[in-house]
Amino acid sequence: MNQTKNSMQKIKAFRDDRNWRQFHNEKDLAISISLESSELLELFQWKTSEEVKASKIERIKEELADVLIYSYMLADNLDFDIDDIIEEKLVKNNIKYPVNKSKGSKKKYTDFN
Amino acid sequence: MNQTKNSMQKIKAFRDDRNWRQFHNEKDLAISISLESSELLELFQWKTSEEVKASKIERIKEELADVLIYSYMLADNLDFDIDDIIEEKLVKNNIKYPVNKSKGSKKKYTDFN
Amino acid sequence: MNQTKNSMQKIKAFRDDRNWRQFHNEKDLAISISLESSELLELFQWKTSEEVKASKIERIKEELADVLIYSYMLADNLDFDIDDIIEEKLVKNNIKYPVNKSKGSKKKYTDFN
Amino acid sequence: MNQTKNSMQKIKAFRDDRNWRQFHNEKDLAISISLESSELLELFQWKTSEEVKASKIERIKEELADVLIYSYMLADNLDFDIDDIIEEKLVKNNIKYPVNKSKGSKKKYTDFN
Image 1 (cartoon, helix red, strand yellow):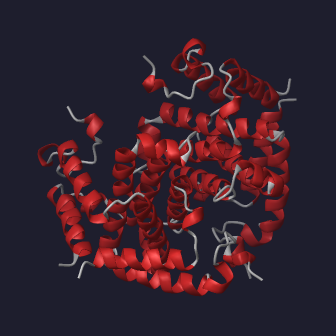
Image 2 (cartoon, chains in turn brown, red, purple, cyan):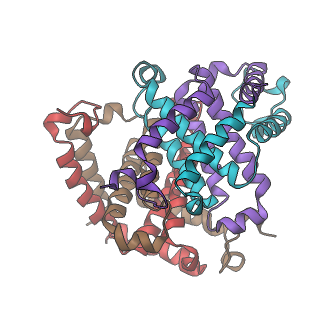
Image 3 (cartoon, one colour):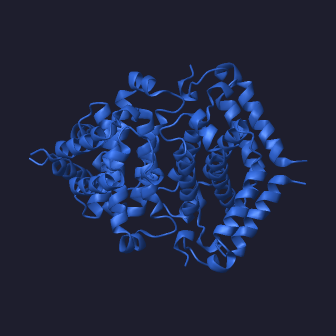
């Protein structure tokens, strides 16, 4: 079974059961993805990764899921296939960050010689 | 085949080929997810959803993919299964937003009677 | 001279010279403040505060100024006095975070006993 | 009296009374500015500017003040003068966005001919 499509079906059913598609224009969905990613980031405010992992793993799970759920909704609005857009972007990133220039380096591609 | 796990494998291979796991502490990954979601949102700045869909569909695809790729990396760091955390969160959202209270309504759950 | 009002005058003149007030609805200004704060945060991605201060102080200055400039524009749209809203919020924060409960502590006010 | 410096003094007193300067490294302050700007943006989620102005003006005031307060704290950490960095950035923006190319136009400077 295609698990990604299975998750997408569940997200669509959740949205359709509530008749929320009408509110979900793409600009507001992009705002929502940004807000959910801030709620995820908030868990790490004033803390180290280690402190957060030790005490807030369930909260990370929930906030990361919210980022994903809104991302899937935006993809659904625009008829994007989640796995396809990931694969296409990895191909582009491979060109931007060739292994020989980026291995073990934090440099941004704009700083490559 | 499990497509989600297939995408995850490709993302892990991309990261491992560059030996980047060492830099990817969870706090910085949460920052990255937030930054990528801002790049997505930036496409909509000063515009309507319709204007953006008409002219920037490829850019939306790329920025949304970046949000997903960093989200998968964080999930990988923490041994989360993408489909499981989505499903678990939908169950919680179902309780927070019961169909009879939320159908056709933009109200936040904290504003329900 | 009131320096805050002086800065506000310069920001208003910059905006009026370009006839940009017409585009600056408050929702898009709130988006802009969020985007500029992400550009500020991006300087710190994968780095420690010390690394960034040693190499990017001019960039921090610029991005922080952008956050402030859009914040002043939103305040101008809504006829807020910058110094007044800061003072009013500090009064509220004083109540939320009384010195005896918060001194030397990172606790969020929701976690006070 | 210099009102900006007056507000800065109040913010510093608030922070020093709680002995919070020790926690306020610049990376976490940049995170805080980003999180507060998201709380501001959240007020506009799923709504038009007009709807928000009609019902949430006090909340906008508070969240915008939080963005400003953290911005002032970061400026204080780095010995930036608020009015100076605004003025310097406006000079740069004037060069990036000359009046004759940008008047009445939403174009980004990278799209100028």
